[in-house]
Amino acid sequence: MLNQDIISIDQFDRETLEGIFEVSLFLEKEIKGRGSLDLLKGKVMASLFFEPSTRTRFSFESAMEKLGGNLVSATGVNFSSMAKGETLEDTIKTIERYADVIVIRHPEMGSARIAADSSNIPVLNAGDGPGEHPTQALLDFYTIKKEMGKVEGLNIAMIGDLKHGRTIHSLLKLLSHYENINYYLVSPEELKIPSEYLKGIKSYKEIKTLVEVLPDADVLYMTRIQKERFASLKEYEKLKDCFVLNKKMLESAKKDMIIMHPLPRVSEIAVDVDEDPRAKYFGQVENGLYVRMALLALVLGKLKLKEKVVI
Ligand code: CP
Image (cartoon, rainbow, N blue to C red; front, side, top):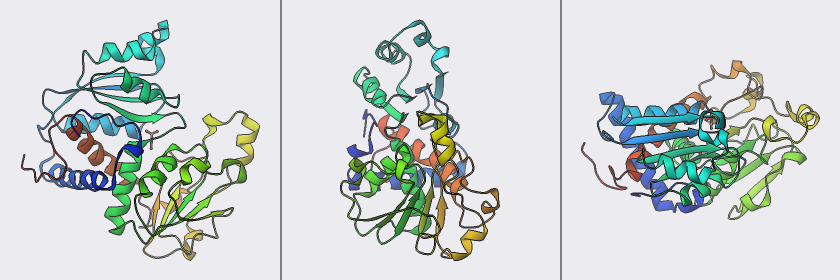
């Protein structure tokens, strides 16, 4: 994966997905055993976040630091010369002179592709508006596989804003490489999954209530209703509390199912769910660190897929 951009989950075949999983697992064990590594010593990551982020930004930055690398960063258009009218293309052509890899989050769909086309160093898409969030899909895959031991044969319920939820879009594309998964897509009519993300998905049901899917789900993937993507506040207010999971509701769920959420949450998971051992969303946050370490090490050529590495 040396020098590869990571823009869309479409670019990965099944073998590569499995390879990234293995490298992430390897780095998780190394970091848990040794605290930090020198793998990316001398390398610089430019962290460009033109849209709010906690997990993606901090996990990429922490991943770089824990692997011995360094950071240069900008958060918000107002903290770069884009506030003076500089284009994204010129911004990227400038930053590539100072860094070895660029991580970018931007509110416009397609912006990560534009950045990659302007850059001679790898560009990693940390979310492009309502488009994709490929590194989140990789960490979601990592979480499901680590917790359940597999993805095939599972009943996976995706709940909430399936129209705007880029984590859902990328995860569905990723999982389309795997057979025998039953999907339950739970959303209000206004927030249905766009049909383009159902290509390659063989078995799915579109459902209107959360309680219907609870007894069957092996993976319950909750998402936030994305206020910032609505044209009108009134429309958001109407839908914002359409699905709320609480501890009592989990009585009907399987004992060995897992609850995931890319976070941030607003009201869709009550805090009383957090103490349930099936709630994996903060573990999912931590997994982002290992997966992003793996991606940085791979695109910077410090690890290779399938290589049995000894650092
Ligand atoms: N899951 C996720 O993308 O979180 P942030 O928006 O906090 O980065």
